[in-house]
Length: 97
Image 1 (cartoon, helix red, strand yellow):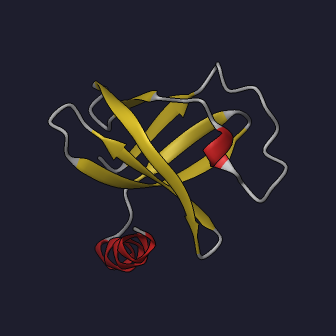
Image 2 (cartoon, helix red, strand yellow; image 1 turned 90 degrees about the vertical axis):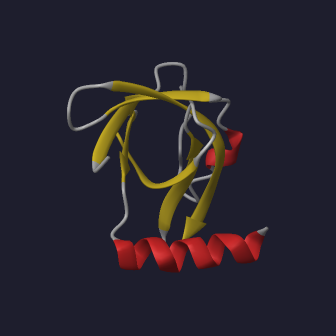
C-alpha cells in the first residue's frame, strides 16, 4: 500500500499542533489502497518522530504495519514510508517499547 486515505468523520477535535493523536478515540480505520480496495485496520498506536506523525495499524491477519500519517482538512492520509525511513522509524519505535 503506497498511499491510502481515511476520513475520520467521528474525529472532531482540533489538532492545535503538538499533534497529540493519543486523544483520538479511533479504534478502527478503513483505508482505500491504490487498487480501490477497502481494507480495515485496528489502530494500535500513534507516535511522533522527526516532526512527523506515524501510526501502527494492525491488519486482519494481525500483522503490524507502519504508516506516516498526514492530516489535512479533517482527512488523514496514511503513507507507506520508504525502506530507509521505515528502518529508521522502526528502530526508534522499538526503543519506545
